[in-house]
Length: 436
Image (cartoon, rainbow, N blue to C red; front, side, top):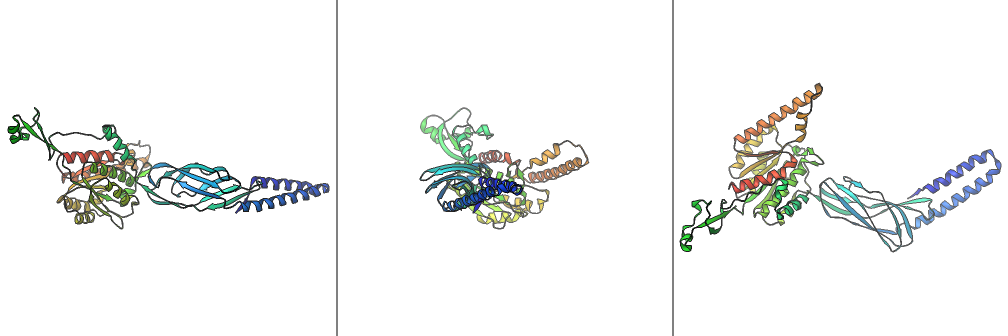
């Protein structure tokens, strides 16, 4: 496709002005005719030359094929021209759901020389996405036209939950600085459930830890040291229903939950426990049986990266029954959801059902916007109504949580941003208390 460039528009404007002047003076008619003929001739020749320069540009896109959601990422384009010289602008066909910075890109390229240009995209939506071709607008040899063409260049991209938090956790754990992000590490020597080793008795050890046969052989007091049990199971029961569509910042509650889930999975796997997953609240629930090794983390990523919250109302009892059919061994089941006061019909039966076989923790996301509504000053009648509605909702939610706590359920009622640290601390507390 040929589009008029500024030079052609300027030439047309000059011809128009001379034509207007020629209408008032016959002596300018010949000048107008000659100018118009020259402009048409040059523009025609330039159009022929411009069409010949199509198809000479080849491109290759370079980017990370797996990206974490909620980040800015760089996309590089490698351009190469077969013959001649080419100058212009290009627009890359990045996924339409992503914002971009740095487009369109200008370029000036000579034959047999490579050019690298780059721009950035805001990765804002998980799942499978595709890049389409490059849209190119190159200046014609004489500058009268812009030659627009599309360079076929299709690439696929997978956007996962934000695994950068896992890398950050791993670095802090290596340097023993986890307290910087609020994670409490309480090493309990000799208080675990699984035998670890024999060692010399210490003054603060319980007499029940003394190994009398070993003490008799050694001629001094020897104590047994225990460690936290390994080979346990952590299973996430993930709500994919309408409750998780609310947003906190740039990410939805569902995305915040996935990030926290993956971080706790990484911690549990490092502790020697098996990790599994079951989803509910959408058309095709997924079940990933508990397994060990850090390869399980990759399975989790591939199992959840394309999930999105639906408009369904979650059925907690049905989710618990599906999960129990797949779980033979006792596990810590972490139910990740957002409670409402109308959940009594299926939630309480599900809690009683799951607690018969498993340890259960309910992690419910608190919506920060409600706290803002309650704390906002009341300046008019509408603000008073809004505050009253917010207070009524929060009180109903607190009654629901109190009822569940009276039934012996462990509950985490936290904001989405607080969820990762709260989950890890709770996991360690229950594990070291021998409740799993």
